[in-house]
Length: 358
Picture 1 (tube, one colour):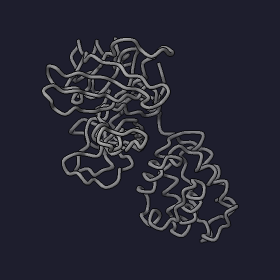
Picture 2 (picture 1 turned 60 degrees about the vertical axis):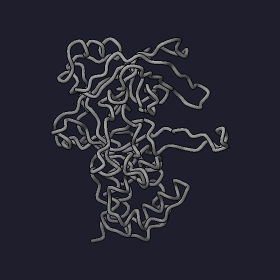
Picture 3 (picture 1 turned 180 degrees about the horizontal axis):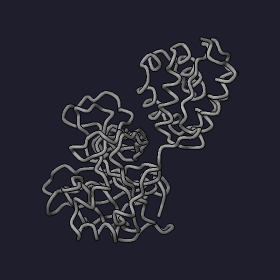
């Protein structure tokens, strides 16, 4: 089994519809030598519809293959594509580990990689016949959290992720094209992005759950997913790790003077800037969105990450309790990791050197 998101296996799914109808785009993930998972509604189109799948667009390793739809199950909004023709040479493609999500009061870190509409870019190196620049869609590595008890009636996962900018088109979601992207938690595939409910706001997506497939699909459909995508029996689904009780998640209350010199904050800032959720612009925006709004508004922002984080931490010191909020948001997003343990160690050392002055 492979572990976690591999960007070389994230797929653009390109659907050509018959009778001159405009085409459709979606996202997907390669789960076997010839198997690709995506959302069923992405590849629906009737007779004459053709599907192709592209990997590593505009990179030296780019390749594209036509695909046949082996399965398109509306009951679970899951589709399985079979790549046709010669494949790009490379190591054998192992199926992912599939995970389950318990029905419990949990908030789980998650990630997904796809190709939504708001990542549309102009290519200034290539031009159309009329002289206008060609366009392309770049990748979106969405990171965030899943509040497990949301969307219980719909039976989906709610992903809270960094929101795109303004949404100028009321008829098309900026997330269009993200459907079918694999959703990951702790190295396991737990769902596929399915929809964006506009009423939820720009920072929320819904995803179908892999742990519901066994209840929603027929025996023949499950057999296809087992043979071509490596889906195990229900007993083979991986449960998320139990919330850690050690230093990785232990809360540390900080009451620090807002006049601390930068050298005193150096260790904590170094630990923060090493964390994936902080290094990602989208992840950092999500963290700031989840704490007191004064921090995002009043923090002096800078293009250099380290300078930016110094400014954020210094601003937190002026608003009591907000540094604790920031660290807790990072613990929830990152989970139990070496980086979070280092962050907690640095926070504990700060608390030791500057005990609560009350």
